[in-house]
Image 1 (cartoon, rainbow, N blue to C red):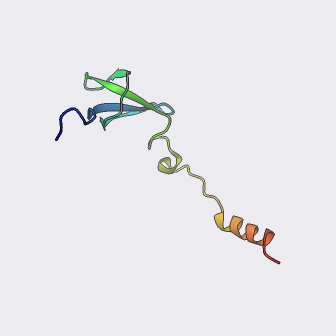
Image 2: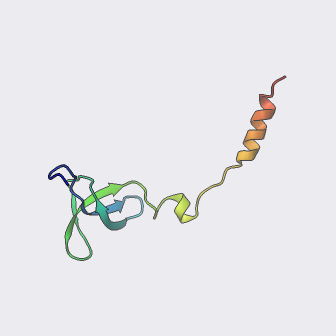
Image 3: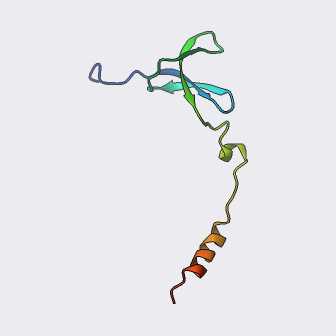
Length: 81
């Protein structure tokens, strides 16, 4: 591998702002913020608006839309004459 062309791949904490959920993983994303993690070490911090802990699909609060009814209504309204 060529030296100095690859991004810094390190452990990073991602924090979900909507649910105060955080997880430690590896990433190359750059940040200036840091946070002290449960193990006592300090890691770079990335703040995200939504994660699997707060997303409606993963929490089971997702609403299903009646897509079939909408398509039929569209076809009736704009049917060619």
